[in-house]
Image (tube, rainbow, N blue to C red; front, side):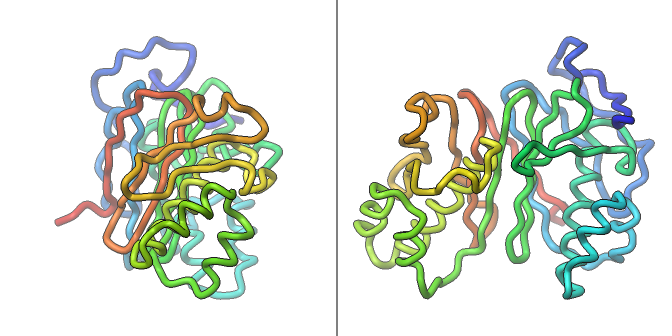
Length: 269
């Protein structure tokens, strides 16, 4: 059965007032967590989740049998722990917004593996990305969304990766960047492309060199073109993210006029 959703403004069957706050105080969480903020129309909530020392069993207890099976395939303990923490915290976030139990949430996937909530009437959309030391989750209503984050680091074969996966305009723009800016420009390009294919829902079935994004710090994040449909660039909005020092991220979302609200977990002291 689908997850039980007690928050009526997150279902398509009710009107959306855009006021008030969620009542999640009855839900018990394995980590300190405040009730979810109100998610309004045309607003994206972006959560930055820091790795934190915690008993991982508190998170594994929230996972489904399928999630536990996926986690068990990791050969190294730290990868198992990271998967369990990420997916457990995702369940906690979704449960707070939906006002339900994290264990009651059921997921489905499209034909390319993009996860969604199984409940067809639910308006809530989400996406998650992880890099070394940081996880990000994006949530919105009634629009497809994708998020990607990367730890900025030197990449020995940066030029060959770009030549293989970036479009011709992106490679030209990367080459034109000052040398000290090229690593950051590479990750701006990479995260924007990853966020877009995740939001689109087709994932890596889309060749990365068949569309182009901006990558310079002097330009606004944008989807420039897609070879398969000239209308795609006007359908999607790209947003640059600076979640923490040493990290670069990107958000891709359907439509225009989105406002972003940023939250951290755990909250800063």
